[in-house]
Length: 267
Image 1 (cartoon, rainbow, N blue to C red):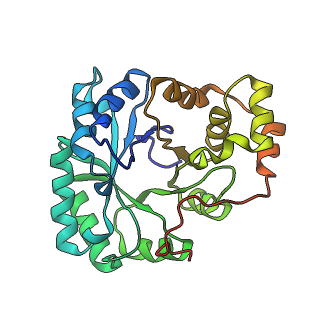
Image 2 (tube, rainbow, N blue to C red):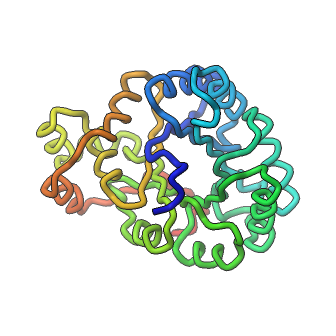
């Protein structure tokens, strides 16, 4: 299995507005047992996320903190400069996991990935991740990186099951970290998910996350800003779906991608 430092369920922190809420949300999540927090330069909330980690009654070394390089910050010098700036905004000694958010804009494998290796060597970053890559782009990245790929973050949920990328993660021994793992609520009305939820007397959110966590090499970072939603999400760690439950969701034929920008490499 990949690095065991990464807890399999984390808190996603993207929002369009009210960035300051993430200070209190992170504190609440850590109180509820989360130990993995996911942010990004483009979320514009790193100072508040970092303050939440600092304010919570949890030791910093027990929290796995990930952020992502913005697509405009992927030239060699920009990677070095902005990664250090993210670390400082987060108020930490080292970023546990730094992703390339999108292989777009200023992304150039030889420059971007060389800079990531340097950041690992300098101790600014502990682990390297990629996000929104295709298998071909992952292959290319592996030829440039000295550091192992610790995680690949992509949209993944019962309506976008990512069989190929999950198989790739197993083959190459890294985490597939599922963002938008509830399809921004899209899974709640899927009959298979609702039926399994009713069987176990839990929420469709809990079932969807438990289905993902039943897969090898998969972690999840659902966004939640309320304590009850955080509790429903983290309850997925304790829900054991049987083979019939898993097969029922595996067999969903409908496919829906929520995050689909024109510059996505699959387009």
